[in-house]
Amino acid sequence: MAGLARAGESFSSREVTDARSGADHRATRGSCDAFTVARDPVDWLERVFDDLGVRFKPALLWKIKSTHLPITVEVKAGEGPGTTLVFNGEDLGDAVIRLAGDLQAWLVAGLGAEVPPCPTHRGALSPSRTDVQPEWRCPEGDLNCAIGDYRDAIWPLGLDERPGDVAAMLGRRLHRRGLREFSGWSAELRDGCWVAEIDVRPNADEDAIRAAAAPIAVKFTQVGPVRTERYESPATGSERAFRALTLRRTMMHLAVLQGTLGRASIADRCDFLVEGPAGHVVRVVLRPEHRIGPATGAVILDSAGQPFASAGDSVLCVGGFLPESHLEGERMPFSAGELRVFE
Ligand SMILES: [Zn+2]
Image (cartoon, rainbow, N blue to C red; front, side):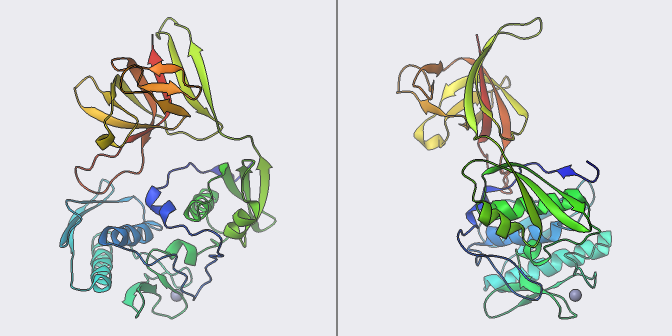
């Protein structure tokens, strides 16, 4: 199928917590349709960087050393130049406006990037203050939206956009509304209109998905529910025998974490630990259905309660670190879609 692109699932959990169910959140140009008023400085930083990154390539990378004001923000444009900005002020709204303006000034001066652009006038929207919340405003007066809601304000994307960009933005719209019962999605131009194809699981709320995609039409394909499979893999010439718990019918990140399994304490807030060859320990959350064993015996049981993995086992996890933290030194758990235990 020409012009078809498939988007992957990679969204931060912070976005999901922003979702409110049951309401129609369609944004229209020229209206302010904030999901929420952001709660803390880090939420605001996420919103500012998220909006500026929609139309900016390469990725805008940022790190902070502390979540307490004043916050020093290290910024880098991909492998390109970087800068240091400060997020501070007696009033949070003023601090947001100032940081957004400083960031825009740096992007224009160093990289010639005017973001986030007004779709009609192409120039950057200005950060500005209302009584309620910080906003983006087009100087020409045709578009304004809460900072953090830029994606919704420019939806639907125009017919000259790339299908992959339309699909990626649609995926974020669905996730942001807490709609997760789909496994794949794409967008393509048909007879001069965008059409989305979405693979939905049995318990998907199709009306809510349709509303989130509107005015883009949606074609649904039914797929089976996500399930956990336990399987055994015999030894081959290159690989030892192993047993595995894995998720089927869902997308998984494919980074690999290999090492020795260890029991986690309650304070670790994860399912188990994996110690790598270099001695560093990673916290792991296991997505396939499982149970945690009692204080002695197997650490991980399968969903039927059968012992599956014990401390000291040689294991391999498939998954990734999601979301990546912007806070320097903060270690996020590894989210595993598969756990292999070698014999
Ligand atoms: Zn405009």
